[in-house]
Image (spheres, rainbow, N blue to C red):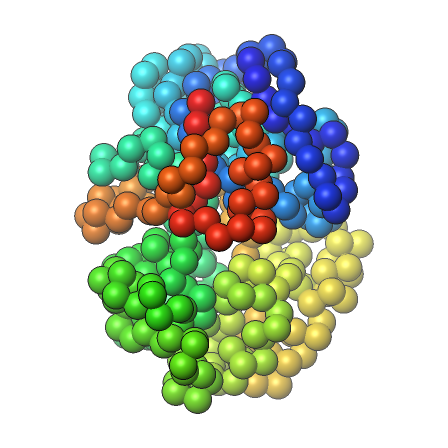
Length: 333
């Protein structure tokens, strides 16, 4: 079978397409024939070695973190899935490999494909959806009646984060470009701020939570609008001491992450705000809950129309890293 593999960490890494045997499965695994594999910014973090402290791979490694597919075979202990089931998954960080024609995946890491999604739109749902789900329920512990602001929330993250937030009963404020206003409000956002003409830090204050999608340059402004006792959750700024504690890292990693995140922790503490960083994990049981929200709200994530195959993997990554995709970029098998 064909796979796309990383041979070495590098700033300008490229993946190599090669043939390898179809994997055998363990008793708790299923063999998936991949239909669509999503290309995510996470690929760049892995390929450049930026996440080596969180997960270091034995190279070469088959890349890819998110997929849809059909179950070809089930292990002896698999009970929730059967052959020919359509599934979607955000793979475990220590067992990636979506850029492949077949992959062995633990039953605990997959969910049945939502009924309103096809293989393409489904491949755009798992990673982003789990990020939002874990962000609201675990990191923020959000409750009905509270307010969340999502700067840059008009993109792929907001497509799933906004309906999930509304299902909890949150008030949702989003910033983004003016062209995304109507579709973002249709998703359920209560207020939209166009960054071309408006500064959110001059318009809103005392929000309970901010979910940062923009990175460290926006940290001080985001912090300025959060009420005392609130939380700032970042998808991009970087890990800190709390992240190391939550993931049960050893002493050395705790020290490293404490040092790396100390500037942000100090700023947050001065405002009596908690700073948190999320690195989404796979979770089949949460995918089942996510599927209910997707189906009930008829959420259909956007997919870029460009068709890529495994031989085009480096072109697909270039579009994600350097271009302006019109939705999730996919590798079609």
